[in-house]
Image: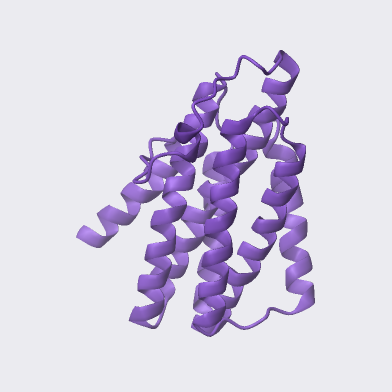
Length: 207
């Protein structure tokens, strides 16, 4: 019962945006405010950070489902450790959205439910496939964050610092999954993951 309560608490905090980061936001070390951004740039940055926030909501759901279905205690612990770092990312994105006087996606419950279902399927397929799913997810997230670094206004050092640290963490999570025995997923599965991500990012930028 205690385990179920903890997992429900994780889900509720992810959906409602009340997650607290354990690590300080990389933006705090920059010390720059947003006075250099005009109204259009602020809306654009907020859209990008809302997309990143949704990505972290989905990450919480994926890792939670894969942790619950993991067969090996070592894999379960690895999923739990990665989820805790992803929770930092969620907190950093929430903080950045508040600084920009904007909000998370209104569809967060839907994003969470869909990602949890996908993570459950990946986890039930076995640990090597589940780890391979983590590896491929993190590879695509790395590419996504690289594109955001190119699209952010040059003067927005606060958002850039957050996205850069998130990218570094995601790269490490992917490498750890491969080192733990994750297999490469079939190309049609990779393509389906990219297509689903495009739907999410396009929608979350505005809603």
